[in-house]
Image 1 (spheres, rainbow, N blue to C red):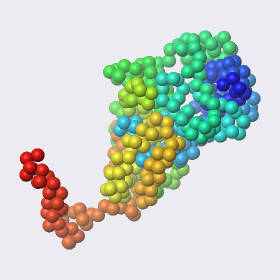
Image 2 (image 1 turned 30 degrees about the vertical axis):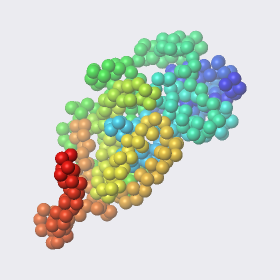
Image 3 (image 1 turned 45 degrees about the vertical axis):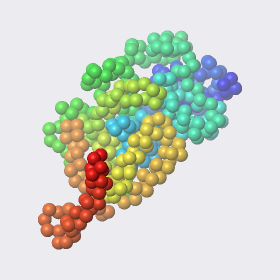
Image 4 (image 1 turned 90 degrees about the vertical axis):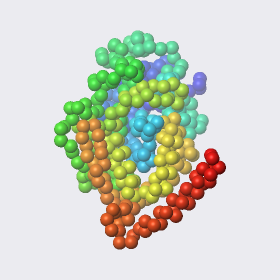
Amino acid sequence: MSDIKKVVLAYSGGLDTSVILKWLQVTYNCEVVTFTADLGQGEELEPARAKAKLMGVPDQNIYIDDLREEFVRDFVFPMMRANARYEGDYLLGTSIARPLISKRLIEIARETGADAVAHGATGKGNDQVRFELSAYALEPGIKVIAPWREWDLTSRTALIAWAEAHQIPVPKDKRGESPFSTDANLLHTSSEGKVLEDPWQETPDYVYSRTVNPEDAPDQPEYITIDFEKGDGVALNGQAMSPATLLAALNDLGRKHGIGRLDLVENRFVGMKSRGMYETPGGEIYARAHRGIESITLDRGAAHLKDELMPKYAELIYNGFWFSPEREMLQAAIDHSQARVNGTVRLKLYKGSASVVGRKSPDSLYSERHVTFEDDAGAYDQKDAAGFIKLNALRLRLLAQQGR
């Protein structure tokens, strides 16, 4: 790594990545390019530019990119077509953002002629794997610097002391032990560590930032509709919206009604279990709606196969294999299934829940004529069921005859 002359750093402007910026300059005596992604985390990003300039990064080496539409259109929506939930619950809000950040890191490295990219993920978590697998998949010869795996700053106190010794501004609210660690984007906010490390203790209410307490949500339900075309949401309450605009509007609704909270103990790819608290207000509403429209537009065989594929697909995203051939193969099958996933879903939002209460589609496979309990005028011959049952029972009867 001694020949590194220029590094592109995934830079948030916070204390950790500011220390990393200076550490790279000191340790590698290299030029640093900073990249800050606007993924809808709801924070002002211009201070990141000011901090980078304060630390000697020239204007042409500071990248702040609005990636919200690309994030939802090319990453969140394709994932939602699969109804992906890691270990049955987690909507993968952090996981799905990492390949996009890595993609842009590599693009900037190519544009600027950088030798390496760097990130602020720790050596205990999943993000280091996600960043680096994505980077290597896109640029196999790239060098990756992960300071948390190299330096001897093993505590918050040591980090702050190093920052002060190198004239790095330390926000006052960071001088003590932070109560928990957070990550946010347009899809979700995650919180981990400190007060959340005991899985027996209920998450304190002050940890939540994206949703009201469901107990304090409005006492009257709110009904909304989401329109879908080829498996993607295109309108809310009849108003056409871009992917990012739609998700942002659903986030506002989810916040108001306390929807999308998840307290989860999950299995990290690196081998340990961790406890996290996730808020995915708009994503939870959207995911419920997508399954609702699929319920009347997907054939049983396709729907059940999708459900079998989903855990593998979700695991690939969680483990950082977005740019792998197997994820792309699964995506092709999933996207093929969405050709006729068109129509409108009506949902009831009420005190923490988003319930599908209506669905309609020009491509609906639901036949009221066949399913009715009233006279179906010969659409279905109930006598056919006898032979169907006997054929399916044949092997069971043969087993029983052998006393097995």
